[in-house]
Amino acid sequence: MSESRSEAPIAVLGAGSWGTALAIQLARNGQPTLLWGNEAEHMAELCAERTNNRYLPGIDLPALLTPVDELSLLLGQVRDVLVVVPSHAFRVVLESIVDWHQSSGHALNEQNRRIVWATKGLDNGRLLHETALDVLGDTIPLAVLSGPTFAGEVAAGLPTAITLACQNPEFSSDLVNRLHDERFRVYTTDDLVGVGLGGAVKNVLAIAAGIADGLKFGANTRAALVTRGLAEIMRLGVALGGQRDTFMGLAGLGDLVLTCTDDQSRNRRLGLALAAGQSAAQAQQIIGQVVEGVAAAREVRQLARASHVDMPIVDQVYSVLHEDLPLEQAVTTLFARQQREEQL
Image (cartoon, rainbow, N blue to C red; front, top):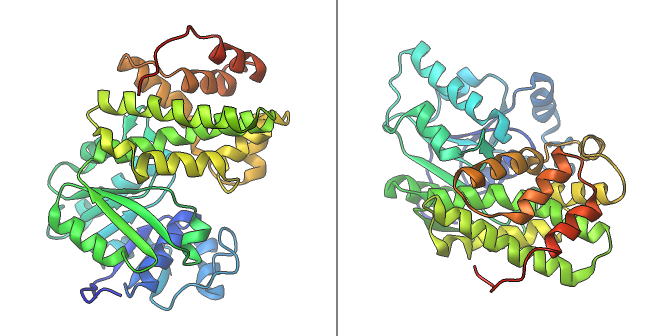
């Protein structure tokens, strides 16, 4: 354990599987941690049972982790906030933080607020750091945490590596000291665009990989989808100002490989369900948690078209999900594309 742990509490907003896992990691690492969820009954269960049976059954909450169901009480106790809610709720949660500052008379500035998020997705076709700047302004430090991580494995303390993107050196260092230990390795960068985009687009590609595997197309097809999918992420990312190296790292290639190849991935499981004849709505109901790739397919496609970037795999996933394109026709369309020189 690091010698420079902070005694100040940190808040985690979002008591789903990933939010709870990160809260467990922080508390296990010696950090007083307040975990907020928007369902009072669920938070009462966490308090009483000291485990999140809904999302991470069998894993005890550390003593330093305190579930809280009132956001206003929590915000007055912390400076640093880690947002881990689904992308469709991201803006609303940030607006709630601003509302608290306005109603309480506390100025929103670097001395009393710093925000990091581990949400993966887009907000109406925009990167989440753009939404954060819209809502919060540019007076407080922002950071994004992303990489190849399954919540259950992090909560269980299995070895994990992740990327933290932050352009404020002090905030970056403080977050690393809170999170990093001998089982949870944190790499740093200043590329908010690349880290944020990689975590959003890989979900769409994982649906494609699940469809292909569900249709028994084999390992060759899966490898082609991962490789050409990475090329699509890189093209869009560079066009938006991301750094190419980011997409070859944990937040790009690492997260893509994980999500496309392991059945712990909700997005991959949705693709498998589609191949088995279920609708997207039926699959999501069975999975029981938000499948970010469904909304992301629409938003990434919108972003790619606005940026004049060709993303054929994303296009076909969008058509399957939102235009009822038959799966076999989507695959035929991809492989019927004109032959060309390979480019990344």
